[in-house]
Length: 267
Image (spheres, rainbow, N blue to C red):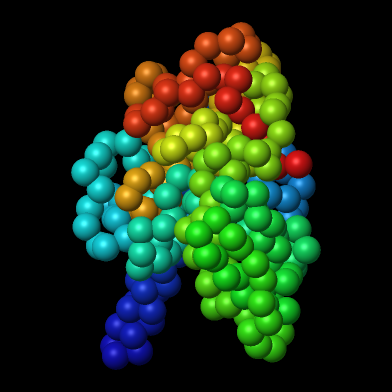
């Protein structure tokens, strides 16, 4: 009897762990009749689809542990740390996701982001033991230690990027793309102070009609959990957004409004 009880307990524990680690692709089903678009293994789009989610019903928390006021905007919460400072806001969250994917793929030379003043912050230089000195608007590298590609050092690099980058600098690194050609990993962005940015984390298509729908995720101000957005303009389709054929017009999300022409892509 004791062995049966222990086995049952293990099964329950395993089930709970698996439920907690559901991904976007596992939990959020496409609308009826739609199927997810095929993605190459190891691609940025595949990485976003496989982002783990916190258990259903989890609250979006701020960096200080408080709950975000507008919980209604979140359909699901991504299981990724926020950090302990008010750093990982909207553009920073997109930088984080892009950098995490490249780090997992060991594409270290591609991890590079610009500060708002145009300074180029290469991760490989950071990992080689250099650090960045900021004095007013003057930014420079200096030698500080030995080579270190460990994850804690990588996260420290990202935190510094979050301090000095934002929507204005990120928009300058992306390339404009046609709304009709939207794909996973694309970014709706309005660079400014503050500006805003959200990222496409999945796309599905209707095989017969050819219609396409997509999911969006964001962080916001103050720094908070990355979360998959609801669709306030189409509640029966939510959390999916319909890719309408017209190239002009607006995309209404819970806390911002974008133009379709705001769509950009990592080069």
